[in-house]
Image 1 (cartoon, helix red, strand yellow):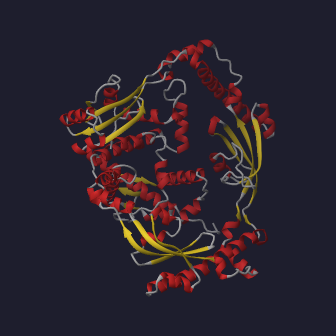
Image 2 (spheres, rainbow, N blue to C red):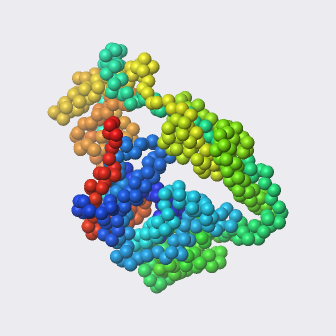
Image 3 (cartoon, one colour):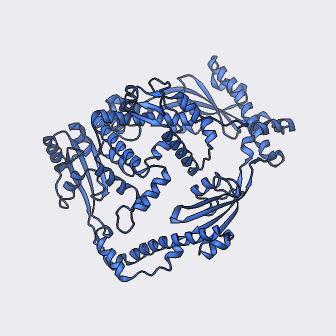
Length: 632
């Protein structure tokens, strides 16, 4: 469980919002009373609430995330699909867990929250000092739409919920029957007789008529849409171009080296395995058994603990500080020993390998430090250049002229769609395919500007939208060949499926498969063959959902071949003969997103929602997320 919690916490702050965004379009059920609550809040969830601002902000973040993933969805489309309601349900679930943690009195200390933010948000750190860069952190908060207090509260709540989750799900163990069920699924084999019929046996497929093509064109018109394209100009402020001219003294390089000597050095790394225990005595017993060479999983099973492996970790990467201190104090080659942790109270540790650290020398990191200082100097110079550009444009100087006078680059692209593709389908060159640039470009009208914004590689860009080419549909004449191929493929599949249904019906009516197949000019190609689930997935997946004696059919994707199979016998391994496999299968339910611990966590969340007496302000929700009519 410790490894699962470490996986949850590692990097979660930097992606704290994406955890919502990735699943925001999934459908979740919420229990509780849904009715107007007569406040300015969208929902009341126990001691917590979801504000209208919070829901609107999260919807915008969801849409931004979809665009970055290459799926452009407008606000109107999202509302039409009721995405705002599903996002509200997600927020309700989170708030219910926060309220649950409040009731239990679990709260993360502000110092811990600050340390987590510094550790997990590279964008908020100064590259050279490792400390918080206030300007960068404020920029990060502006980009995600949070105030400092709001973000601290969000991280504090998430940490509290993770602590509750760990306490409630630690030690969950899958029953033996789970391992047997998985064994039955994995080992199942089926003996089948298979008949096949190629489409060539049914004669030539005539070419489609114009009327048939037109009907198919109307059905598949979405496939032939040409998206909207936009032509825009970028004024680019590149820190690298300014950094190249920066004068960095040797004195500054030495000063940074002395202050950052520890960070620049290579830390010691260790690989080790732990077996968690409920008491110090159990931990000592486990350590003795590990010392005798026993398998860690077997030792863990014997004492009701868990085994966790750490591969080539630094002390800082081990989430349990007390455990890390104990492990990194063990000499190389030490025998397994019992230790006390902070998250895992007791554990037996087997040290596998030690990779010594290496102290940094000025010569080895001189170029790295110089590059970092030059980059900082370049960023400072960018601010002056941007200010000069804005002054010149305010005075009426043309955009291109003002940019070059300020030492900035001017780049233009003739046409690009919202996914960053050219009309040819190729990806546009950076930074024209940057998701943040595209998001802004497709949110303004022709002739409008977007003020300087930071994108990848620390580039600052100013956007001017020149022109818009509206979306359209490719004419039928351009896609006639593709339509004809699709029509023929469908016709082949339809004809073969009709034959397949007649053969299956005949078999279920008592006719032997060879005779039923021969009546339709199909031939037997396999008789009494034994196949696995994987084999069936490449031919007729339905074989593994049929009962003994049943017949099933499948047609190849291109409509060229019909296969009909009859299941003659179903065989599975005897659980009594496969105890080691069953135990491994049972253990597999302890890991992953669908582990028993995760399932228990979902059940806890559902109970928290039910106990929160959820009330939704339907009136405010409908007023805030209404679709505009043409008259509007």
